[in-house]
Image (cartoon, rainbow, N blue to C red; front, side):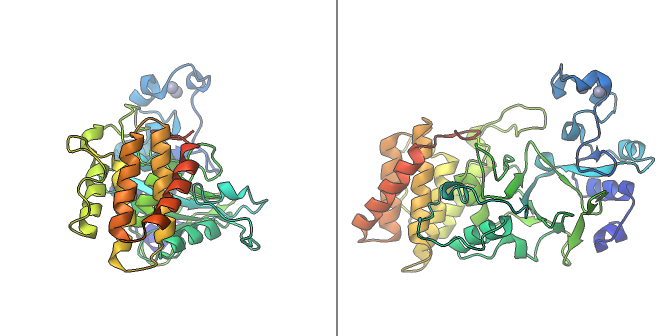
Length: 376
Ligand SMILES: [Zn+2]
Ligand SMILES: [Zn+2]
């Protein structure tokens, strides 16, 4: 490991690129002084072809940004021979999911878009809520967790604009999709972007005209993605549970054997043996990974007799299930039974309360179909 990169100090871009590649993270050049990919050649600039068919990449050039990313030391040495480029990391193929927290300021969006799928009542005072640091902290608090921004056990990188990148390892071969916190499709939280398949992240040690991207704290290794955050990414449509065959822009494993589905099921089982096996599903059906993940999140409440965010978790689970039903990915009866079964198992004797929460979450979720690529 390059000592200066590891220490969070400044290094030559080539040293940064070599260090990233040594971690198994494919890198691509960023144009000098900026955080955007180095430009395409004139032949590629007009967008006449898809990245997959580009002759430049085969010829070892860097056209098409993260699509060209490599871990090949010879190619890296050639690209960064003059140290004129910054370094981008192609997150999906690197097995990374990076939480990109912004502090842009500006007007708050509607309450529906601060934490998508989590209603915030009109009488809740939002004074002081001003950035992705705040929305992410609220999301974490709903799970009884600390914000990833404070996670000293993983690589964190400060940005020139006062933001923070929190790097996590996506357990292979789990696939997560990128999003922007202001996105109309999928989003995790206002002013929080997700960098995974279909995205890249500026490597620590890169210096732009706006300033440096600097590792903070002591940890230089991405930790495994926390289970609660994986559940939230699933709920908000970031799980890629089908291959799109897309040229490094998306994962390529078969949906039925997705590592994510296996991990989600294990999470359910690990929570407590005896969790209702049916989950409202008939025996021949493979439960969708996304359903297992949301119910697993809910099942975690069973470890304590009350509290533990049961209402919020049940509401969010119902919201996800409603989105799956609206998108035609889950039969309505199956989803509703699974929610009722899980709620009754987690909080026995509260069926009327659970019924009200489920009805509210389902209605909200059905208004936002959850397609494989994200919310409509
Ligand atoms: Zn080209
Ligand atoms: Zn091209």
